[in-house]
Length: 245
Image 1: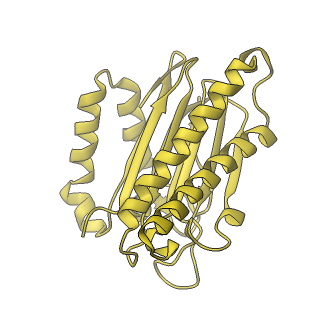
Image 2: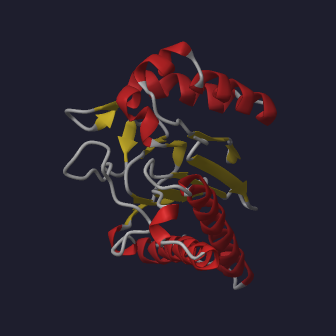
């Protein structure tokens, strides 16, 4: 089977960073395509809306509030869903064939906006603070069950958070890493997992080398022994106001 995860990011001006990660449903035949299209559509819509905001003088206004960030992120999820609908119509198959989860965020040196549908994790750290899990993974009644973007009520179950303080570190990952990164009883980030990644990304100088190092980490024997699922990891750190990813 192909890898059913997909992740991507985009840097915009003024230190803005957009990121998204999706995990395709293992039981859906086109889930790998669904994840790829959902991530790309979400980032495309976020980039367009944020550029429009800048053109309208957004940089001279106050930072986006929770309501504005929520609207931006929900519009991105709606576009991702619409793209999966289009794919299903083109191929004459049920929309559920492209089922996937989706996590997306917009980060700046001063604030963070994030949204999640389904499982996976988004962890952040304010300067001088501890790691926080922004959303509890949305699990169903049975093992490996969650909610997908293609579900009838999928868009209604998107959760949104606004963090109105600088975040030095943001990590997004699919559920293949939950068992090693989240303390299940307390549902809190496992600091020994995140701290080395945090320190690494803040010190990274070469983006290409960072990608290679992260790929090597994800394929390590330690992780292979703890997870038989696809694994995707997106790391971001702010250093002197400039995002590293």
